[in-house]
Image 1 (cartoon, rainbow, N blue to C red):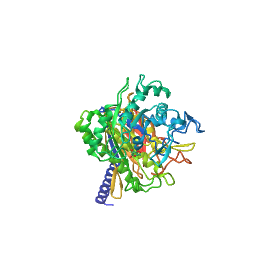
Image 2 (image 1 turned 60 degrees about the vertical axis):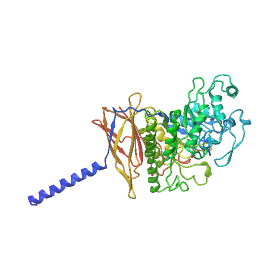
Image 3 (image 1 turned 90 degrees about the vertical axis):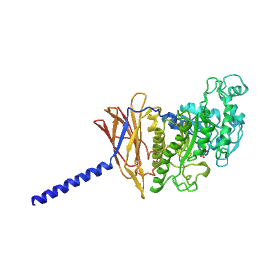
Length: 519
Ligand code: AHR
């Protein structure tokens, strides 16, 4: 070969090598965590649950009654209680949902045999009210969660709601406090979170925001703080993109409320009538669900910016007390019971949505996934004596490290996950610092086909060790846990992370969520 040809060949090789390097560099996701700039606490209540008197959410899922042969504590399933204790549930919202605005609390107190049977609009079934106020508060105590009671505005009265608060919290000798004592609870309960109606724009009374704002003021005038109890009052807020509702509430009610609720559900399919299945779905439905879930960022940002105009100090919390994926019910199940499976896709919806809430933690100080057991995006499914933990359950387990930790601002330059000419960012993450100084990272790769190499630069801290790696992933994005195969999708230990010169490199499997602890 002539010298000139040799030089040309060398030049081509160098060019090819350079091109390869650029291509590899582009496939890498680069993340910067500002470990010294954290000022906002991630409220543990972002990891709250919602339990409605709906379908098998309570009856069968939590409550089996004291005479059941399913092991129970005072009628409540032991297996479910133990599983929930493992994820440190901070609060549980009850009794609804839409059910809250049809519920009279007096139906659920006193001897169970004397409680009235009522029609539950969910599935038109008879409800014997065996699970009432005391059962709920006992359940919260057993799992170590704060109760969040939702009062009835739609079909109830101011007097009913006022009396419920008095019954629960009055330390003296009023008639209602004496009733509570007779019902087996001499001491007043400590009740913090109190919802004033639910979806008052719809199932909670079809009100305008102006009318509801006046109702809120009327109801809360009579909700007293007795003894040392202090109610944190949460107003019924908007759904989705209803920014007008937020504006009116901030203008007319402002700091008379401690929280404003927001509901947003992820619907993978084209409409509420065709939400798509929870099993055996296409990649298109996988992609569309994650895309719809990502809208939470825009929705929360917009409601927050309206709230900022009226409340720049952020006294009023945005409480996303219903969220999650809502699919068509499982074939063969009662359509009103909202029973669906829960896949690896849904775990990724949970992780990426929690990342959004964490990012907005200055304003979003509570969120309650819908719903805890056997309904919608559940943590737990039950069938008779059997219990299955869902992929979403494991996300809540991984993310408990962020409860009340300081949010560390994070910048992510992520590769795209593309489908049919549309794209989503593949990587989403949360970094936080806990009260002992440990740093925690949870990171998701939603791309169902491609692994990602993520390089994380930690500004403002010298890290020397990475521990306790765990990963949640699956063979396919629609993999689920069933009663026959309960461990199909579960947490495994992860050794794909390495730390060199303060930079953390993570080899993320496709469709995976990884958690790491750093020092
Ligand atoms: O979570 C199911 C229902 O969805 C709730 O009852 C209601 O608030 C919402 O529309």
